[in-house]
Length: 68
Image (tube, rainbow, N blue to C red; front, side, top):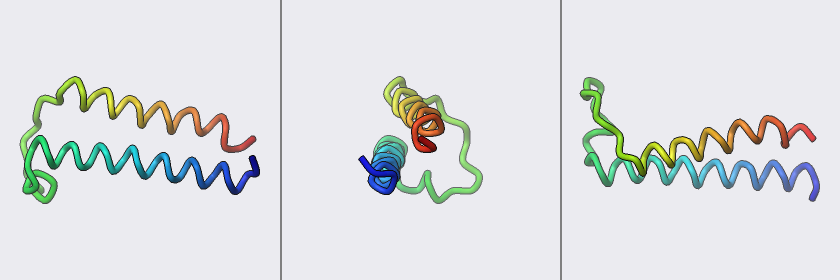
């Protein structure tokens, strides 16, 4: 795999993970939640925390793999 292909795959996976987190937030908390500046803190579900950890794991591992 070339470096350009690796970066493209990383970007595509990041886009999918972030899109999934945003769409899940809108689906579970409502569309107006994303556009409110003074929204209250809400308890995150176990599934949301799992998606968030998956994205952070992806980013942290990319810091090790992408430079190679």
